[in-house]
Image 1 (cartoon, one colour):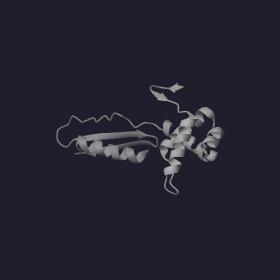
Image 2: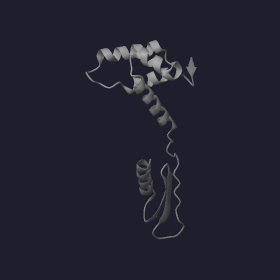
Image 3: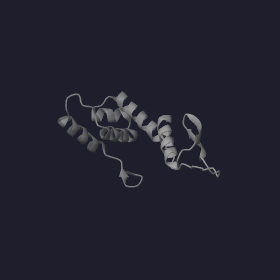
Image 4: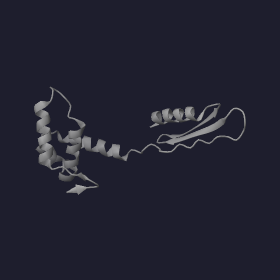
Length: 131
């Protein structure tokens, strides 16, 4: 069975083998790698949480929480790919208004004497903190 372009849904035996290999080589109390969790979530979506948890010797509640977390990450909004900087036409000290809109609301900043590079850095810094 295939999904999307070039990505294929792993077989439960393939994922079980990955977990077996990890269990043989892991350090004591090591966390399950994200790659194995992703594979388990993928199989659980197709075959069900309880069946997958039993086959892979995982806690069903933890597997379900991993599924919910994976869904939340996939639904998270992507950051904007475009930032518009509008320069004023007046000579002298440049002025501008920087407007940011994100998941927590809107932010408007009036700037005097800042370069386009400084404004781009400021907007990136504020955007990273905002969401």
